[in-house]
Image: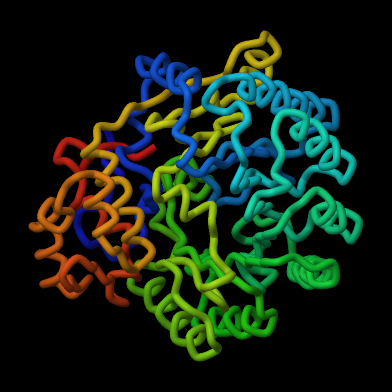
Length: 440
């Protein structure tokens, strides 16, 4: 099986997944554990555990050259209508099960793909249908991902009407040539218009995404990106370092042509993010993780991420969507027509699952919380009945000596050096058998 996890420092941006969002790797999820996922859904829940929903909207105008998600481009209205109905039917089935029935939704996330690809009418239909099974009216956070070119004033008003509290705008770059080279569907004029509408309508939180290291990026342009981002003054700014998972268009082009990576190397990307940290902190932003920066940490929190990292219950809806219910991971079927057909037949579309051991749950929560830059391990000690610092003593010692983090009693503090390459550090905490396997 191909190695994707980076266990040694590399300069070139090679093909493979660096960004870690789960443990063990998704590739070990399997069909044998599907009965365990169904059993978890049919069991009475621990209602003290926060509960949320992730809904995957897989439609896009174009497929970005660096995209590795399950997306479908240029779908007609009939297919979208069937999909919205299938998501509603899936939730209707789930809402009758003990693990879901009557539970209060504390957070919700609409991701993709491009959720904002849906029309205002389709968004209202989706809200009306889903609300017959659950309601997110009392949710502390409802996040909605948007591609700038899919928005108009009416649609932004509809987002407010259906209860969205956090809009995430996929800016990526403020350079038209770079956007086009990397396959983005929008240009900068769409960014300005979309952000203006979002500001006019008003949301409790607005996030913008940037990507460091897109094809064609330069020092001059990166600094201009930071200037523009600060000028916009969003509540949250997320900066990803470009990577090249196996199923991206760029990766396939490299394989077919034998050409070297067109993406900036890791030292350059880390330098750009470090420069961004300096600029953002000087402007009053705070570091919330290796990727996320917020104006006000007291109110500008990304609750979906917080709950995901802590292993709380997240109900997945839609094609290829994955979640975590009562200690069991599971993912839906990842083919659009198959997903719709399975749901239309009255069955749950669960495609694979995994039951982590208590040790794996500890590892998962510890490494994901490391991405936030600081872990107070007392809560982990109590939750898992171990001394977390002792459990990871060797890896912590190695990384402290290398300058990636500092350990103060039961507190682990990641340094700037560590934050800039945090995902490459995490495999050292994995169980040996999961350190060199395909991630997805």
